[in-house]
Length: 88
Image (cartoon, rainbow, N blue to C red):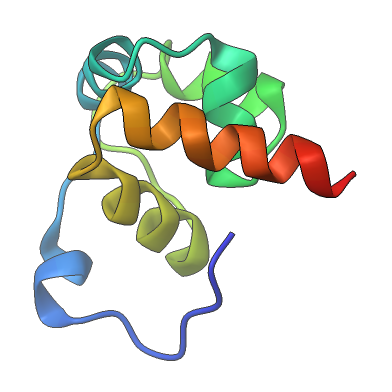
């Protein structure tokens, strides 16, 4: 996950819900496992986020990571995941 000193104001106000997480993951054509790797969290976290009611209460660095991939296209995320796997 990217390191974050202070989120821009728009990031602080961004409201992430289970529906927005699920739709982002589906738009990027990722499994929960792939999405978790991309964001830098455990697969279980993605599972829980997608089932929680109301707004999600996330850590700043997690929220920043989610918002940074929000504008990505499916191909970009696949490339980023491929690079992460190659580093291992």
